[in-house]
Image (cartoon, rainbow, N blue to C red; front, side, top):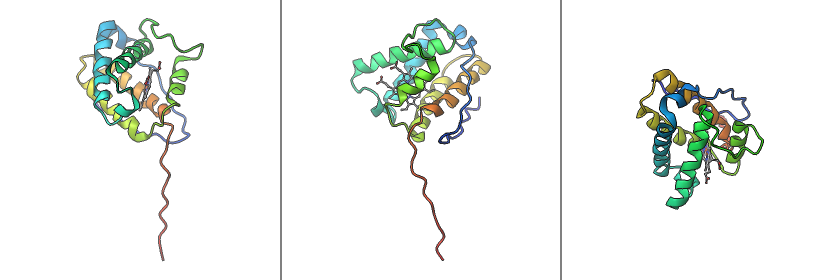
Length: 155
Ligand code: HEM
């Protein structure tokens, strides 16, 4: 499978679709949990680990909570109940506003996700639908942009 990544562009509208429901159906609750725990193990060792709690017990809580979000967004049972009336994806963008997330952070996050999916046995079309969601949605978590540098030719 081709894990395509396109760059986030400041202010650009980002169309995305939730992953196919079949993804949850194929993996089930335990399978999703196993997959997402592997993903966060990768994050814990990554260049964006500093964004997350360093304390193992606190990090374990993040793992558990975030897994429930992914179960729900993949059409599983509604086990993630923090949206406070807001639409789930809209709420999730807000959560990330508390952190300065750059494109580089997003690429590191997607790198872990790619590694995780490569080691997950599930139908390619389902995998692709999950990837397409995270690849697009992650653009909306990017809220910090490096200053554009202008190079002028000197005469
Ligand atoms: C598809 C993209 C992403 C999704 C679906 C996603 C999902 C989530 C979820 C479900 C939470 C937990 C919210 C809560 O209930 O408190 C969360 C928190 C967080 N996410 Fe993301 N995320 C994404 C991308 C990213 C990226 C690119 C970064 C880069 C650093 C990031 C960093 C964080 C951090 C630091 C937290 C807070 C962890 C804590 O509780 O201390 N996320 N994310």
